[in-house]
Image (cartoon, rainbow, N blue to C red):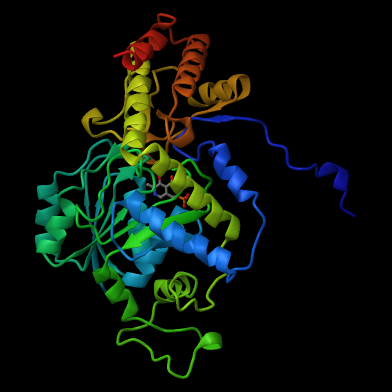
Length: 410
Ligand SMILES: Cc1ncc(COP(=O)(O)O)c(C=O)c1O
């Protein structure tokens, strides 16, 4: 018999999440999630779905009709777009500058794409001309690119990429999970065909839902693969001219039919996550998208100034760093885990470790979403400086805080 006394009601400790995401959700979002559940075709629910589409068009800066959410974490959004657009054998090109570029390769492989890559060392980004040269050489159907790769903290400039792709007849897909609303992203102006994101970084929400937007061209390619599932197929439902999408859950053609006035019965929309997505977008748009980006810029700059004033070396090309996360190079002879444990256990602050070539050697500190705030930056710098001194890395105590204050007071 299970001893239920050992299974207390969930009561996690309060942490300040200053890693590369997830971060603490805005209390407005968790309150929205606690709202009563309603049926998936209740007119109130379908109204919320329509409103969520409109709100995210403003977040993505797009007129794309097909702007909605996929139920699942960021990689669910990525996988949905990739499996719905890539037919086995299609050529794709992935500029890889960190772990999440490799994730795009991995998912594309599983869609049986013919995957081509170009790479730069972790800590750098691509010159758009290099991407264009690779497009000319490979002639892919799709370019798959990350905007902000949290593994390296860097931000790939994308303003020219969509236009380059259009000129060469290539579709562009961007994973903007970590960068959305913390850094500029203009889907229509930059001519991007597909962009997917998630809530758990600068949008101040929990992981579990992936907003995305698709250009009419991308939608046309997806709709040509129409295949309505057996149990709900009507007599007049003909298949598309192209081969079916090899996933049911991530079949974007069916998901579009569910989100449109047709309202076919595909999955059951994750009600509480939809409430969360809607509230995250409302919070950002009420503050003003440009103000939110600026808030990430200034808090990110204060964190950078504070860390540098402690004598720490920062990772990568700082001219191309995301506003919302910074990599700190571990000083020699300082133990990575000991520092992270002291931060967590003695201050309740989580900072991030790293993976791949940076594993054990770089800490990643985020200033994003609800935690892109002065008090969070100051608390983190105070704790980090104390911990580093405790483990033997000597700083001029207080220098980090003064440098951060100077950024805020400029
Ligand atoms: C750029 C990027 N893409 C994708 C992901 C994967 O997100 P998830 O764990 O929500 O699937 C992450 C997570 O950190 C990310 O930073």
